[in-house]
Image 1: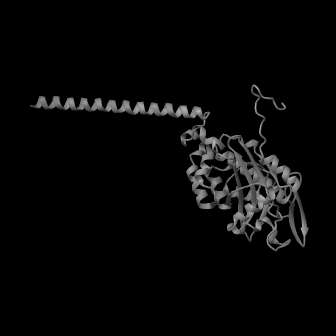
Image 2 (image 1 turned 45 degrees about the horizontal axis):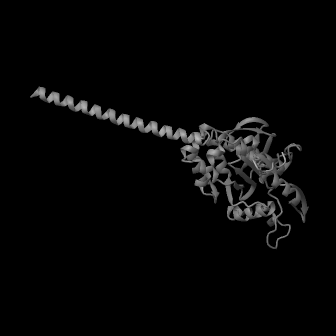
Image 3 (image 1 turned 180 degrees about the vertical axis):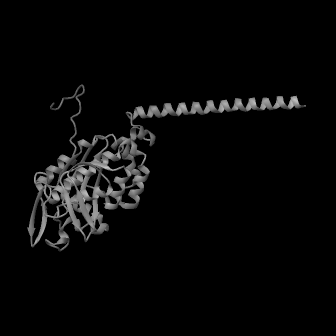
Length: 333
C-alpha cells in the first residue's frame, strides 16, 4: 500500500513537471512571437522603439499635423513670457518666436494705456484665448493651443529631471522684497536647480540698473533670449533616456501646475518623434519692431513688414521640388 502510494505521488509530480514545461515553452513562444513582432514594428518605424511601445505604426506619423502652441509664463499675475512655438514631427523642424510683453495691441476703447500691452490680456490666466487671438493677429499664424506655465511648474520640472546645465549669460544680482524675489547667480556654465532656473527666466536687470551686455540684448530683449535658451536646455535634459521614465510625473506636474487647452493624449503622440529631434537646429527669433514712449508709457510696436518675413522664415516650410519622373519636366535644380 505504501509503495503504491509513493509510485502514484511520483507520477503526479512527473505530470506536473511535464505540464510546467509545456506552460514555460508556451510562454517562451509567445514572448518570442511578441518580440519579433515588436522588432518588426520598431524596424518599420526606423528604430523608434518608444513609438512602437506606444502602439504607433507608419500611419501615426503621417496623421500628425504641425503642432503650434503659445507658451505663456506667469509671475505675479502677468505673463512675462509669451512664445509662439511650432513643431513638425515629419520634417523635425521646430521654431520659437518671442513676443515682447509690452507689445502694443488694440483693446476696446483704450489708447496707449497699460490695457494696450499684450501681457494685460493674460489677466492672471483667466483669458488666455485673448492673448492667442492677439498673437495670431500680429503674426498671421493660426495657433489654437496654449500652455500657461507658472514658476512653480518650472521649479518642479527642473528638479524632477535632476537640474539643467545652462550657460548663464551675465552676473545676476537683483532683489525685489515686495515679490520676495531674489536673484543671485554668477555668469558661466553651471547646473541650475528649479529655484535657480526661475531666477534666470525672471531676470531683467541688476540692483544697480545694469543689465545684459548690449550685444546680447538689453533688459526685456535679453530676458526673452535667455528664456528661449533655457527652454531648449530644459527640453534637452528632459528627453534624455534616463528621464523618459519620469513621463508620468511630468504629466502630473502639467495637470497640477499648468493650464492648457491641449489634450494630453495628443501631446503624448508627439513625444516619440520629438525625442529624436536635434534641439540645436531649433530656429529662434523675437518679434521685430521698436520700443517707443507714448503718453508716459513705453510700448513695443511690431514692424508689420519685417514680422511677415520672420514668420515666413520660421513657420512656413518650403516644399522641396519633387524628383523628376519619366515623362515630366524637371523644375529648376
